[in-house]
Length: 208
Image 1 (cartoon, rainbow, N blue to C red):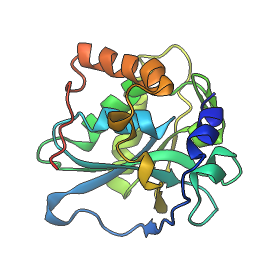
Image 2: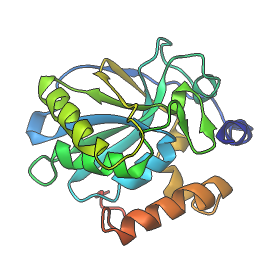
Image 3: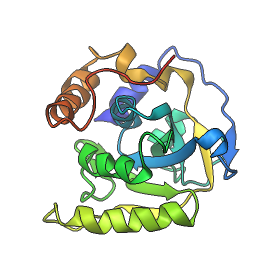
């Protein structure tokens, strides 16, 4: 269970303050923002870092009622937040629709509040759309994706309100901890599968 791993990782770690980012425009200089939840954010971050056109990927929380939640609080399942990745991307190089194509392949959108052994509302499948344009694309993408699944897709499509960045040690977690048991058993096989299908690149594409 990832919850048990969460508690282990927290031992000896300082609780870091985080600040919220409200729903203001993020499209200056032609850079746009997507906020997606597909289970553990360590996994989703590693996937989206390997897409050309993605400028940055930040792990954090969205969709709940607790202000400035800690990872420990979110793991408890009482804050209402989902683990999400906030993705800044260059629409001239990769479209929002393409990000969603990868989203459907990077997790199981048919399991309610669960991804594998990770269970709880914090692991729900959710798209937080930034504006009506993204909403329309997301709804169309969900309908198209449904044709590839036997079970109904349960992914929520809801308006983005606020994003809270997770503690610093979560950022770039897989790349810094790829030999850790959760990374080796859960994330690495998923990346290898997506790499084999040529959905993502084999190396991180984000420029330092």
